[in-house]
Structure formats: structure tokens, C-alpha cells
Length: 187
Image (cartoon, rainbow, N blue to C red):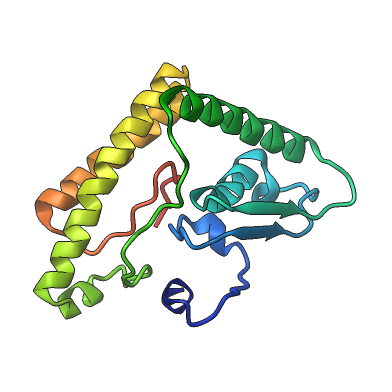
């Protein structure tokens, strides 16, 4: 994944890789095979999460390959379009020109045991610390937007994520991968 971010290659094929909450702004195309198959990995929520991976790139596209349009696909497409329309209206009314998110390249996947944190140079820790602070600010905005949209379940999930990240920030448990709106993974 790091080599993809550094531009060493252009294509990365993964199974459910983009659903795992990795924040990769370089992703400009997401292809979902068998999108009409029912099940957890093709639920409305999972499809929206996967589709969202391409949303961080101004030229992001998503292809859903399917024989029919399932209810989950229809709902995910409608929700994505609703969000897109809302964002376009907001951008237009505030004179905003969309830009792809730009993030520093650092190892996206780290050992959960913290072994990788010990290997970081002090300047690398500082970069991760700054990224975490920026992410917290973005999450707070996202939480209030969800609340204003009466999506209290999502707002509460984001609030919980903010609390978790603030605790890590105070405890200096770095590095951490931060993804707005990503569901917490059970360990």
C-alpha cells in the first residue's frame, strides 16, 4: 500500500481491502465485482464504505459489476447521489472548488502491538501527531454535519471515534490509522 501511495505502481488489486478503513486519497477507481450478491460484504453500508474510498479523489469513479441491481446497490447509489448533490450545492453556494485530499505518505499499516512505533524517528512521530490532530478536527466537523442531517447514529459513532483518538493523542499511542466515518473494527 505504501508503494502505491509513493507511485511505484498504479494498480492494486485487493479483496475487501478498501473496506478496511484505509485512507488512500490516491485511489481514483474502485471496481466492485458481484456487487449484486447479498451478504455482509455487499450490504448497503459496506457498499457505501467502499464507494467512499474513491470520494477522496476529485476524479474518483466507482464501477459496480452486477447482473441485476440489488436493493443494497440501489440504496447505496441513491445515498451516494444524495451526498454528492448536497456537497455540490454546498460547494456552489460557498465558492469551493473541489480538490483531492493530499496526505503525507507514511506507512499506512502498522503493527497493532506497537512494535512499529518504536522504530519511528522523532520527526516521524511528530508528523503522525500532526496528522492525528488534523483528523480530529475533520472528524469533529463531520460529527456536527451528521448531527445537523439528523443522522444521530453516525454522529454518535464519530463522537466515539473522536474520544478514542483523543485518548490516543494524550497517551501518545502512535502511530494510528485514522479514517473519518469508518466503523470501529472489533479486535
